[in-house]
Image (cartoon, rainbow, N blue to C red; front, top):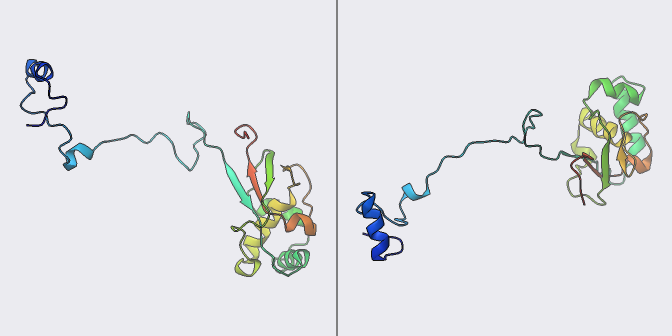
Length: 162
């Protein structure tokens, strides 16, 4: 029998509880590694939960050597739209202002050739609502070469700290 501590006093105390002959210290078997844990948070973000994980959204497209304005305006025309503001009704966007962090040369930005028109325009909508420092859903959708080639991470201001 393996007892933790091994002292006579410790074994005597276990004997008082009637468990001295049943206690094994780290037997190494599967029973020592079993446990049950309750899930108290979800990555899917439940607003009613006591635990709030900071939300981070990423937006960016790697246009390579292509002109970003031409790519986005052609995609808009292929969908039969003529105004970038019409994309607000088509794609869900965050409704509150967010902090923006520009990520130069982001490896996660997908190449424009791998995106369909819908995916490209969803990214372009987010980028058009961003300045280098803030995402603002109240501002008009402004597409410039600078805004479309920017890769950004958007953070909730309440949970952001540096």
